[in-house]
Length: 219
Ligand SMILES: [Zn+2]
Image (cartoon, rainbow, N blue to C red; front, side, top):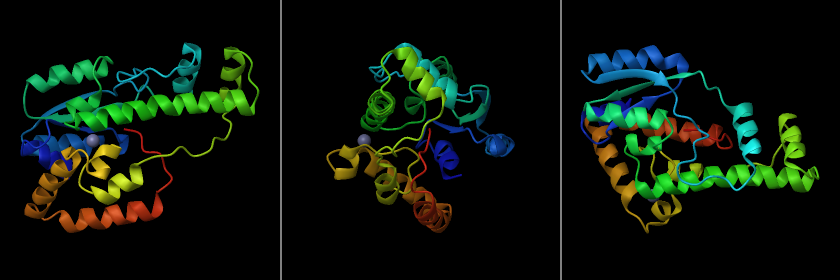
């Protein structure tokens, strides 16, 4: 909800709501607040605009074929007409959706790097652990849905340090070398206080940190 109000206040250019069960609520909230509402398919997670993983293409295809639900819809809420062009670039895979959602450049790049590295880690794990000799072997193993060690992630630290932002902060932001996430978090905290959402957000973030730490959040 805060992210939607942030769009209304010009702190964020757009909001993207991709939880299918809330799609109607997102649309209703957008209409009530006088925002533009667009429902589209989700931006592709296999476009890798920041960096392509250094593994065979067939493996990347199988990786996303296995985990993606491509047909799902997503609702976008925004104010300015120009934003719809950026949204369509994001859906066609030309632009990382982080740029449409107003995330800091440093965090978008770090997240893109992490996503590429995750696929590489899975690939290398399959090659080492299952002795896959060819890319076909690696794909075959992947399709059996084997267990993998949990990937390293900054999600916990990011939520803990910046509870009001809706992206995963990069390590520069977390360690204070970049002020981008900190500034955005401050603006959103101020807004949350003004609209009376601060207590609820702090509480739900504490719950989230306590119960869902190991879940890998997909954007
Ligand atoms: Zn950052």
